[in-house]
Image (cartoon, rainbow, N blue to C red; front, side, top):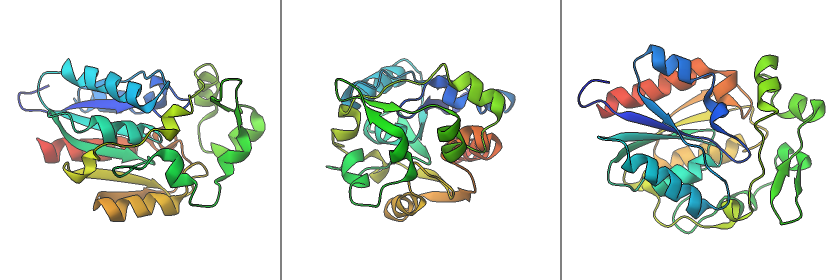
Length: 231
């Protein structure tokens, strides 16, 4: 990475893992973009925020945070770190101060994903993972990627969705947003509301929620555009 370049931190969403970005990272490497993968425990928003802040602490120079889905709430909070210079949201939550993931979705009609979620014994959220749910929610993800992802699914504590944002980083950082126009997890109308409120530079892709696997080139393009703009 050349002097003055921006380092990228990729933050996965609820139930996900660093494998969320496995179709994107080879493209970033080929373009000479340095990156680090977050691996959050999803025990609470505060703990995931702290984990991302620790990653930023360990990176010399300026950082671009990229978040998918719930990962958008994480970067919205962790992005107030003084070395974070920009944010990229990939079909992601962009809460404002005082908002939580739950408070955002509870004001809208349920997305289709609600049919495929259930609560565990400690109130955690567990995603159904079978042929029916994959066909309904991630129909455009390559089969080999889907097979690999079956071993990566994790549960998500309810505190991730209930804890509120303190200071929204997008209010003081330049932001980019990829809207997934066929998303059945996070309604596209909500994503477009985020874009308008944030004043983010935005593009739309006709994919499922799994944008990073369904259209990794467009994700890499937006990340590269942000890196160049910030450099």
